[in-house]
Amino acid sequence: MAQFQPGHVHIERTALNQNDHSYDLNINYEVLQDPKEGRGIQFHMSGSVEGKTVDEKFFLPKDQVLPSFLSLATRKAQSYLAPPKKFESLGSPHKLYDAMFEDIRRLLDVKSGDPIKPEHLE
Image (tube, rainbow, N blue to C red; front, side, top):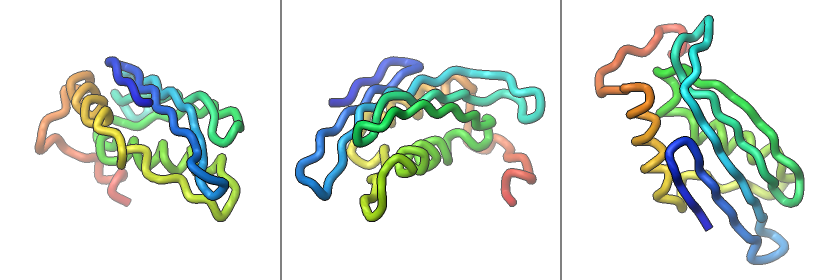
């Protein structure tokens, strides 16, 4: 099950076998002005992965949010799985992230060719 509404995504998955994994995650996001990084998006990922409670908050500045938010959220979700299980990319099976991507672009007024801070390239 997956649902999108502006500022919120809910995604749920049930394990198909013992080598698979389950999760039930909510990702809320909003524009925030960070004193050091400037405008960006504050994310709050909550719910559960394999029955373990998830409560993760992270901020990404405007020039980093669109190329990075799904990979960072996926890495955070992976940290709740015991090896050797691997968490698939949150974005891979869910077209709702296209809507989330567009909502974030709208919220931050992101346009092609917007500058990237050089320190973010390191």
